[in-house]
Image (tube, rainbow, N blue to C red; front, side, top):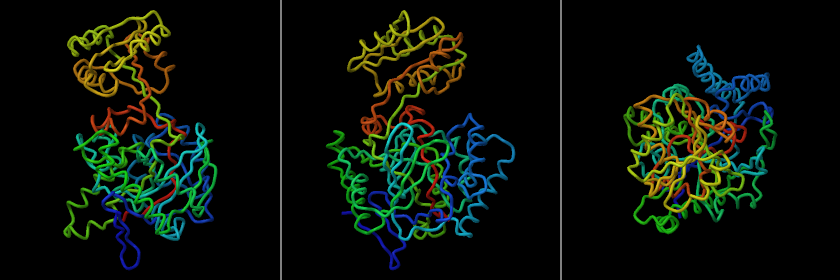
Length: 455
């Protein structure tokens, strides 16, 4: 059983073995309009400033998380430093004026989210230990990134967080719990309701409940420890000798990496290495979601390449894979889909594509990687570095069909990743290429609501 560390006043509770802390969660006081308070993750609608202007109108006249986040659509605008300063001041005001208040007891928040696509997606708000997380390539920590972390994307995020008094999570972290033992049973324990309201911009509904009794907290920790048992882990993934992976990043990869980067700086500057380990910045507030939850859907992210010569690219790809790569041209899209599906067998990767000449697919025998996207990018990234060209990340076949067939362009179609194979892929292959999958559409992403002091 994991050991619960509690000081004399019940202030500090930590299950270090499983990278879990019982946080003091802050929620808006009962007078706050939660419909106006809660807004979607800052990294959504990055090409749609009109969406955020509508959010601003919706939230007008009431305290809102919009005032304490920096939507990425505005990152390149002038006045960024002043905006960050205003964010920090507003955070402190929300604390000083009682807009944010602690839950009655330390604990977790059980979440039930309805989206436009799913009647229910269940989660659990917890704090995870950044000491158990490493986003660098080849990491074997308890908490791992699922996609490559682009380090040069961190500085603007660091600027926002480094002087912030609170954090508000849009991070979603996955657990692989096929028995549904960690999150789902908590709904059967009559937890105390905390909130129940419609989200703005037609983004569904959310309910929250307090998981704050010692018994329920201990049950969560016990079930997580079972998942983290080396024997259970090795048997589940046929991974004897591999380091345990308990938590895999879902959404908010770069936000958690930002928290980690700041925590490492705090440790470097600390004069007392022991006391700094109790610094609240050591932890990050996240929502745990079971990868087996029916409300959690993975969708593929396709690629369109601009400013390339498709024939030269295909020829270079065949040479790169040294005889294991075969090119097939097809009559049309339907023919491509039919023939590609027929060609798909174990030990073979099939990558459909389109260009100005029409449709086709690439067959690669005995691929080194688990996913088709990883196989393509093992060639494509180096090729584009040498020859130029721009990659865009595309949701939906329709857009690839529209853009890929234009002169100088090329589209690649990918199948949806099997969410049930994600953990095994990360264990054996490491982090996936950037933008491999999406956990739902933009309006299904996490909305800011809960907060936690980090200073």
